[in-house]
Image (cartoon, rainbow, N blue to C red; front, side):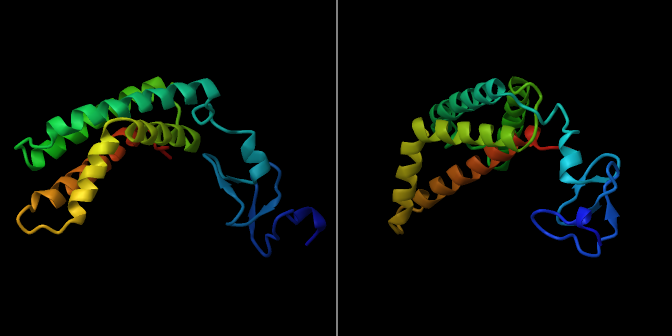
Length: 180
């Protein structure tokens, strides 16, 4: 094994994998799977898709849009708390958030990747924390902490908020997930 095959951070050892561009030895720990073969990190960096490259303006625009959506959800959530739709209400909610996720995907300029998901999640969490949802959630947590057998609705309200947050996260962020 020559010195050329040694990586700065670790030794690839007896790996038989080679980069399709520079023919350098790579291991399962350091290779990057690409559309045509495996590449080393240096070569893969040159071929980053335009879909994964998001400018700071796009990330800021997406973060602000998700922040507004999080604040708006704080006003809408109490209205849907006592809807007698059962499981159908959750299905309707998922498709509503999925549609809003497609709108946010368009706001993000159809970009994907870790930076975009981080900006979207951060904006949404900040909007939920700054809006009226924070107070509603704190009240639901406090009410569920008191085990009152005469009021079983306190824990069901907290469960409702947690289920709705999960449905919102999956529906909104599913558009930003990288398809390979």
